Length: 481
Picture 1: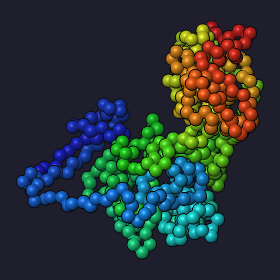
Picture 2: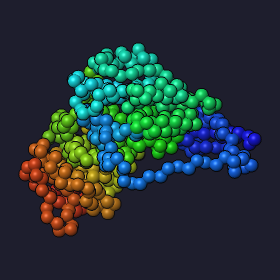
Picture 3: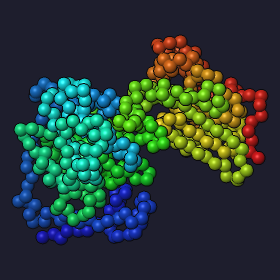
């Protein structure tokens, strides 16, 4: 018999080493390497007598004539939007987020809506009767989950609740052909374990094997499963990276706990668009949907404040208008401060360098503070032009024209590049009453963009110098002292 081998893996990044160390050389974390037992391979002498079974192949054409897989629609529009129109039977979804951000609250509301019969006010979808949903908590007791359900007004929802961590026990409990489970919630995957593996719960081997066993069981029985995952201090889902490859959909629940808004973002979806977002508002009765996030994000905007610009962003298929706030102040320190909330700090450094090099503005020697109002995070490069306009306005202490939006990517040569789907952004801006938009120049000589929701004037910008000339003021610029 071949002997079992030992290996050592990092609980944070999944890196594998041949010996134990106090610090992981891949991610730099301390006290995160644990020992794992690798199962022995089949001896070579027995390989001939241990042949695999033949698998059955099928064609791309479904014999039952089914072209669209039915989905489990919760009736929570923002949740269904992010998942691509509902949960697909047999799919595996992984949702991660900071502690206390509202992951368990969101899933409890979703599972209550999915399990409710059609004649109750908890749901408004077209699911069939007898939809059985199971919520398994590995971190809280059943009484604690009931307390949250009572606070949310969901204590009458027909949800099967359990507190367990043994994967084999969980799968044996949901195995009921007479009343099959359609949705299984695992909160969280880091607490699950399989008893025949000599590792503690939360280790790379336990997380990987537990998820693989649950996913295999779910796909064989057309049962949708949702895993809750812990995150590291960098915001990445803890555990092996292969966990994100195993599941069909990866969702991140984002938001600043000092704000009431929460963003559910899809970073991977095999059954729908990626980068789709759902906007929620945290209230005393739970998470409420935000149907028009643009209007809410701009509700407290001061129209005559210097350093404020409106960005027409696009998150997935949803256009959204947000306020970009910038503050440029003189500093007496050798290294000026750069503070960014809701945007990439590296792109801010690039925009500052381009403004100073291509337009001659003295800005790099000042303290710069940038904020995306509302606690939302913007990832697309179309925000470059709005950030540049906000910085120029803050530097010159000159407010930008009211009812004006900006979007466009800025290159290192100072050119303003085109971005995707400008018509959707213009339509959203016109719907909210904006009258002018500064967008990248149309160098292909195509017909000008049209905003079907109303009249909006288009001002094309092909270089960052033109933007600086338009909003320059006779007032002296703020310079470092």
